[in-house]
Length: 248
Length: 303
Image 1 (spheres, each protein chain N blue to C red):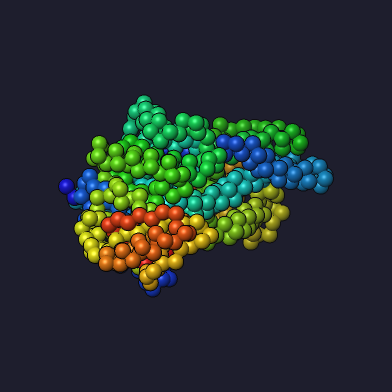
Image 2: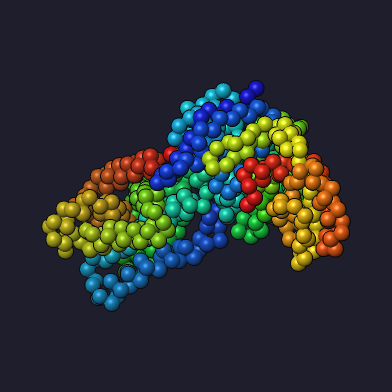
């Protein structure tokens, strides 16, 4: 039996083969909606407040990660449940957590070109100065993993592909619109501002604003990172305990 | 040594009142070529999935080499290769990748896994398609790859669920030869789920016949067929559009258009031969002792 890190490497490569021909189209699809939003919210709305534009840029990076993490991961977990892939992996001497981490890792790799493209195109359109913090290499994976964990749970709990797709989209849009992701916190009612602290997208957007643009935020970066890490651990634990694996 | 010992295994699926497996007890010895026969819905796949620890029994136990498979999640997977009925689950890997990863994840070194990949490509004659992904292959080719993946790293036990489905006749013969060689030369225990009783009879050493979730017969094919010692197997070949008239009341089992199999009483044989010899629709007929298929059909009934 191979050690965990070897299993993870092999299984991640296997999962990445799912996009060997479709990754370009997948990236384009994940970038189109955020870039369209950036254009609409900045150029056509005519808002040139740098703080608002910063929210628009990082909020749409969160949208990209939501589309990759929640929508696509939920669909993928539904697919591997229904086409026998989980049984195939379970028949091999690999840990259950290996296949979960490999799947989430593959989606992280796949989300990076879309996030970078959204950042590059958005920055060019909005004319914002970047102030990249090295912690971005921790923040982006943490956001991707925590949102992928959420997507995996949807894919495991839904009864069919249509339900998965609907719930994935609904939850993505809810997280995107609920709280200071796309607009500053002072534009929301107090109750929404408070409740938004329950949403992972709030911490994702806050962390991105701080590591991409150096914008100050009501939530310190360390808190964002700690909360995102906590969400990732809890959600992956739930996935590990719910997945239909070896006789459950 | 005993490979599998199954005791009073019962499995219910949610919202179903009848069990898919009902109090099954079986012993499969190491190195055996064991056949599991039964009609659709008889519970064969449910049984082998529990043997592979892919499904949890509602009650009862499965022991593999003396250890309960339920005690350790990874134990069964370290000893078996499992070929599911549904074909190859990984759609976007190439043949080469599927074989390499299967051997490597079963614990072989990278170099050995590459050698194993090449051996299996040669053995199953997959050279022309080795760079193709499953999406680019026919149903029969996918079955071959699934079989090769199951064989990768030479697991001591192979559980094969309908391995010859979708295969062309010549390829089926080759697959049976490969499985027979793996059993005879490597001592691999082969547990075979199949509908193809006629072909399976040539390779299996012991058999269990399932119906409605229960094992209704088990033993060596020869010993089981002794139950039909007073009967004979009659194969009739005729023009598909002109079925012959049979003298008795036995209902024929159609193997393919223009080909019937019948199980007749020995003392009726002369009557049948006389009738078929004078029937212009009959192109050929053959009489032999009863086959495992006859036994199977007499127990589970024709499909």
